[in-house]
Structures are given as C-alpha cells and as structure tokens.
Image (cartoon, rainbow, N blue to C red; front, side, top):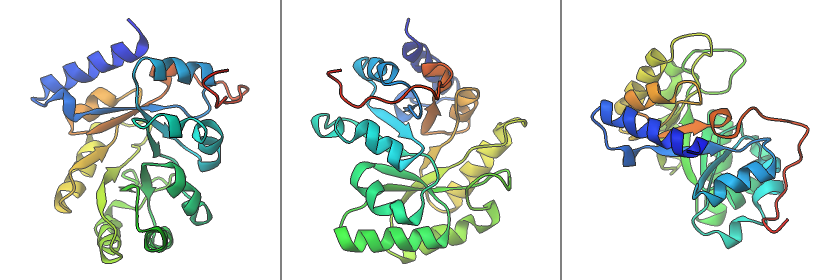
Length: 227
C-alpha cells in the first residue's frame, strides 16, 4: 500500500469514528520543496489537490503542468505578499492565508480588476505565536467582516496549531470561530495530527512529510511531466 493509500485509509477511519462522511475530508498534498519525481508519482496515483507555500516556487513547478490537467487544484498555504497577489490569482484555485487588512484590500482590488477570485480562507493564528502568520483569534471576526464588506466570499478558516502542544483545543477553537461566522470549511491538520483534525471537523488536511517523506531542499523541482 502506498503512503497516499495509507493516509486516505487513516482519514476514512478517523472520519467514520467521528460519525462523519470520509468524502467530506480532502487530502491536500503539500508538495513544497519536494523533488518533482516524488510529486509526479503522487499525481499519477490520482491525487488532484496540492498545497504550495510560495508563489514563485509554485509557478516554477506547476505553470506548465496545470493547463493540461483541468482537474488539478492548487492551494496557496503559505504567506502571501501583496505584490504577489496578481501572480497568485493566475495560478492558484484557493488562497488559504488571508490574514491582514492590507492583503484583503489587495485581493479585493484584483477581484475588481479580473472579475474572478480564487476560493479564500482566513488564516487564524490560534496559538497567538509571534513567529507565525495569521490573524489573532480575537480579531478574526472583524477580518472576516472586512472581507465581506469588500465583496469577498470567504469559504473557511485555516490554522497551524503550536507544534509542542496538543492540537485538539486549537482545532476546536478554529471550528468555533468558523461556526460563529457561518463558515463551513476548515483547513487544519498536518502529517502528525490530521486524524485529530478530522475528529474536530477538518474539511481538508494538509499532509507533506507523511506522504512524500522528509523534504530535501537540495532538489530542484521539475515542471515537465515528460522529463
């Protein structure tokens, strides 16, 4: 059984144990900094949803691949600089890291310019960790309201809980903020805690190392499936 098949089985079991439909949980393959042969192998297995941290790296990897793969879905799961918004719109199907007023206004301006928008998630810094991106929980309602006032449709929330603490309370907090704002999608859970996230209501889990193995930053991503 491949790593992907094992992860999907674990997601299914966690969902059923929580009384949920496994089909309501999407596996996002975190392909950042992975060698292309590893990504291509997962792609060949039928994986369609991938997460990337940086716009420029994603462009290098996926820009030539995406046009020939209409079912491919790319999600930006790393911080987005306002000067990269136009590039992000051109490549990504979802931006999961909306986290500040300046970025909201830049996204709204690009929506006005193009008339289209990727799906949008607000990132919440559930652990209030100074080194992490994301709006603080106490300010999340206001940021969602700002997005809506700018005509942006927010699909859900995203979070990365503190690494050294039990994740369940942070997943539960994110679910509570989402419910208070009428949001149904929750992007939470990674390689070490995705089953807990599913139990807490995750609708997508972002799995990298458990799927691909540890990242080797010496590899350069290849973008041509024929290579």
